[in-house]
Image (cartoon, rainbow, N blue to C red; front, side, top):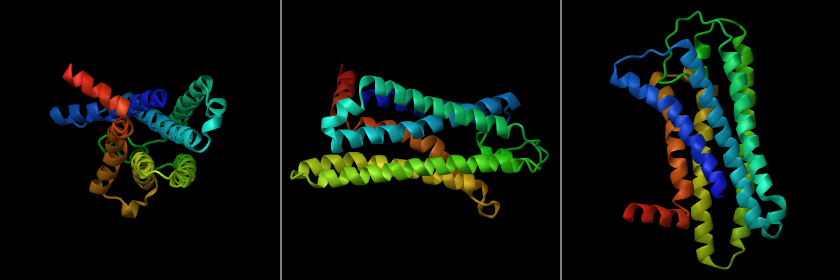
Length: 249
């Protein structure tokens, strides 16, 4: 789990560093400018880190499922080599997703100006500036990505159902409390991440407003990555003890 926590922390840090520093720079210097190449780079890295994060969350859920529901098969199913392979697959999936979305989005001709109604380069906001029918290709790709994300969410829910069924057979109430206090916040954060991201990408133009777009984008691009390490790490007694030793010298 520590290996996956490290990868999750890197993806969360990367996604925040892709959007927040530029937004802070624009706010402090009272500007709203970003170059075309900078916008493409920001979109690529944001989708890369967010896509990798979703894959890592799914892998971590599977890791928890095997450790609780199939403990005797854990070393067979999840050896050290399997850890590396799954993490590499997560990062590779994020890279390919980002490459396809960036290439499709920035191949669109922009004829409705160049002003984005968002604090970072977001795919739906860029599509709004296009007057070409080829933007339907990117919308279809976006819909496929959302369906894959929802597939990951269904896998997460089914895995947690099996985990809860196994935990409820434990006679100790302390075991119940530990399992539920660990799993439910994870499920809540994944639900928040996917619901806000999906609604932001697939909502109709009639439902769009500047304040709603901003709130949704902040929730899935800033709040969730910032809270993920806290929820995953501070529930771990060893990590809390290490942080306490670091703070107290």
